[in-house]
Image (tube, rainbow, N blue to C red):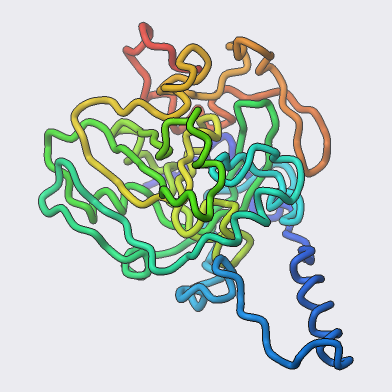
Length: 327
């Protein structure tokens, strides 16, 4: 008889707080424009949608995707209005605490968008993002997200398992790592005009990490295509690692033999290493990681080893005691 044991971090669906309906300020602004037009205060021409407007996403018919009940939370989902306007996305700005990043990110066109798949694969190719999304089975997962800066949130991501993408890409046996690369477009991403950062943003995972059940490629959030500031149209979510490992707005996935050196590892390797697994006992050189602040509730709670996903991922690191696994 097969007995399925629920992971330690998973709770029944009834334990997950349902998402409330939050109106973003962009919706309010849109409503205001409509009222002005109705009152004859505009020239009657309809404003063109922003280049990054999720409402124009060609795959919006796939949302909301069915929630996978294996991935639940023990605290409330962070409101969209909060998580959508608290972003570390240095391509678009460095002030995560206000609307700056979200507003600037809207300028980035979502289509056309292609992803290059290369390196040690059977057939290198460049594929349109819509073809990738429609080739995969989308699902929703509730994940914890933990930033290296000691704040956290809880997000309902929509996407597909990275291991499914890996299988679809058909890597060769010599591939040991998966290297992710983000877009470069300084005309819409002003942060990329700051030459103190070695653009493009790069980071990577081992093949074992990439094919773990938790590694997830994200296309949507809160039941719809993801707005740009979340890393649309394709981003990575690896919830047991600090957030800087979850590369946003991916344009290239390479299967390689040598370990990739990420952007933050290049900038300051003493503080931001390749592994970046969450551990409350290992402090950042400039602050403690023992606790975290939930940006949705303002509560401070103890940090969990591997962000609470140790049962699923701790085995990936057996025999690597000589490595700096947590920073």
